[in-house]
Length: 87
Image (tube, rainbow, N blue to C red; front, side):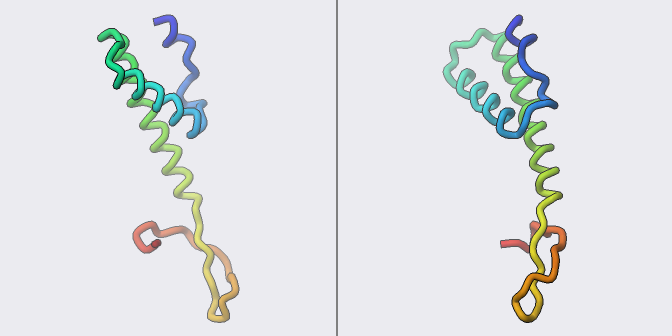
């Protein structure tokens, strides 16, 4: 478990770093040549990485704004994105 001790703290990872590590964990687990204890440890870290990614995505989504256009087609400002009405 010395490897687990040297892993970076999840809360300090960027979205891209967390996704990259999560992809590596999935790849290792899919190969099936990891000992049971290590598989459990990797799975647990993967769950934490997934939760962290969801948190970061939620924060980013809250910051997304859409441009409000006036009758003349020119931008008048921004408003919060309503994901149910976008698209």
